[in-house]
Amino acid sequence: MAAMTESRTLYEVIGGETVVRDMVDRFYDLMELEPQFALLRATHGTSLDNARERLFMFLSGWMGGPDLYVQAHGHPRLRMRHMPFAIGTKERDQWLQAMAWAMEDVGIDEALRLRLMESFYQTADWMRNKPD
Image 1 (cartoon, helix red, strand yellow):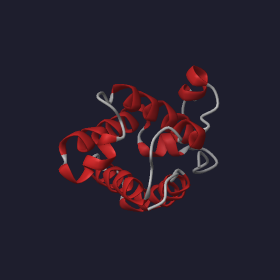
Image 2: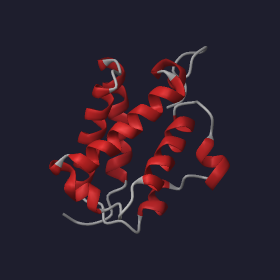
Image 3: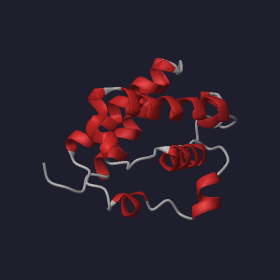
Image 4: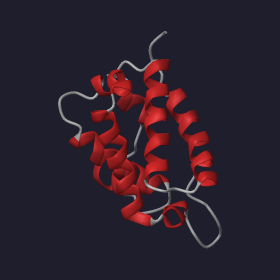
């Protein structure tokens, strides 16, 4: 996903650290504030601080910016790391809805949001680990 153009990464196109951080913060704020994300919020324990920081670190590297997650935690192993959490279609859909809303709120261009949502859907769907 990192390669956007030959000269600019997705990380640069999206606005770098500030926009990635704003997007992640808005995502978790929505999860905390909006009742429609209650099921998703319940999978995260009492504090969102750790998840907030890890998603920021992961997305930074995934988008072609600093590979913060790998430097701090090693290979992401997304599916393995998410196995302790029951993730079904409802959790997947809430995650995608919160992320779409967060991207819109921080002003990410619609065409770029659609491209990102395609990738996010593929990953979120792959994370499902419980029957519906």
